[in-house]
Length: 280
Image (cartoon, rainbow, N blue to C red; front, side):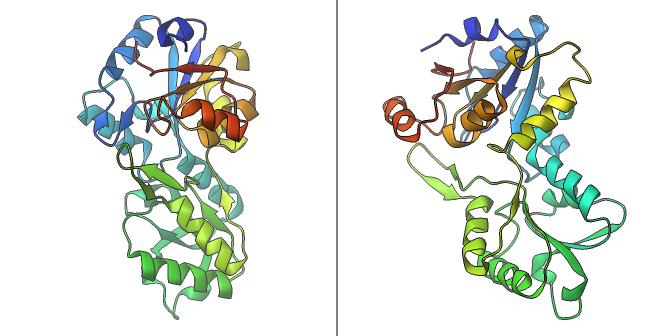
């Protein structure tokens, strides 16, 4: 069990997961603001690497600010939604993009040449104009109607299907979880036999995206200068390990202190370090 401050002193850049590391179902994890104050004092770079595609980086940062954490600004947030947006820019240059999620999450798929359509508004008059389906968030639509329309759209149209948040579930309390949009995507895949294009941790693409982003601002970095801090073995730790980063598992989110050893043993996903929290 490592002391987080002693650990952070060894690195130039810290990547943080958001949920379970900086905040939880109650709000900000008590004391986390001290960590970011110390990072700023030490002139260390930090970024939030998140699978949350429910809102734009600006709105995600605003949520931190409302909780009293002003050190996290939009330019320090790298979301899986940004990768979905890049894919659409490069591969789907025109047409109608149908999506499941909130109106705020549609920020990631709005750009010149593409029109957006909440999937619940799909009908016989516009179905043939849809050129891609994107699953962004588990809120903003009726699940039964939305999933039925997603299934039937993919049965009828040979279009790319994208999931911007691959998380299957997220914690609602210490003992309960809720199904996330990634879990709904698995259901649609099983029924249709079609595979979604996934963005976000543990896929290395989000780490490559983050790497290309930060080297523009921090010259001379190597991967050994970066620490990935997360609470989930199968996303944060596995993704960081695959990209060649040192990883620190914290016990303020998905894993309880009494469970982490057995989970590591059974999964084979081994963090470089383990800390009680990311609080300094």
